[in-house]
Image (cartoon, rainbow, N blue to C red; front, top):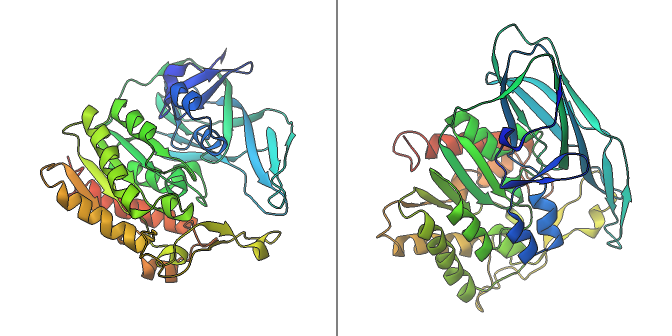
Length: 381
């Protein structure tokens, strides 16, 4: 039995685009992509971090046919994306993608080259008899087109809905350095908490952009979290005078659509290169061509007198900003170093100086779930 993948089976996306091959999930709506067609943003939003295909079936086997597009860097090792398949909450298949198209980027010249490839098939077999809830986590780090599902029994929509958590952040929330799509830290937290995830973590693109606040404002949500700061620092995108009012405006816009929804403002995780050193950040030239590209800060340590931003300044200002909005009793603040701090950096160092390791993603997600969704946490039910 063959079927094109219906949009109703796709969770965690803003919308799907019909392509000649099938459908492509997008995490941002078309109006954002048209209003601000920035190459980095478009690349990141088309990577379906947190997006799942969810259905019910009595099939004993099924194939998912996709066409991925990966980004590779000349002279640098970059692992391929994966597809994680869960049956009734248990991981049963972790499939490493091969084939598909490859966009190769030369970090020294900035030039790109497209290499075309074939479709990829993820096979699931030997499912026990009975009805199963299947959840297919799509790759967090590759764009993908969904072509078809082939199964030996009907595929039916899953109508069960869990509370919906909308999260926005940077490449760390997107999943950089995570092993697999269900192991990015927001996915780890969502699975621990038993909630539905819409992940608006966008690599290199968390800049307190007004259009992102509008997307969150207009999205269904039972809980909202916003993790801001690291991209503003490592692009040297703002000074203090602009940053604080921008965050106020960002939160105000979200509140226009969600006046009472629990809203958590999260400051940056620990990142040694930017704790006391402003951006811009850059790739360490000495690391190009090695097994591990590394990032460095190019600002002057301690140079904050003219409003330059470091992570320590960002944390101080976000805490102060939250205190000044005390009338909003559903607004909460979380210091990001409680999720990953200096002691964690000693035990589980940032492999590239900027992004957590797979083990650290697990730790961050578990800690977030314990803080936010249990006891007196802001999202506790």
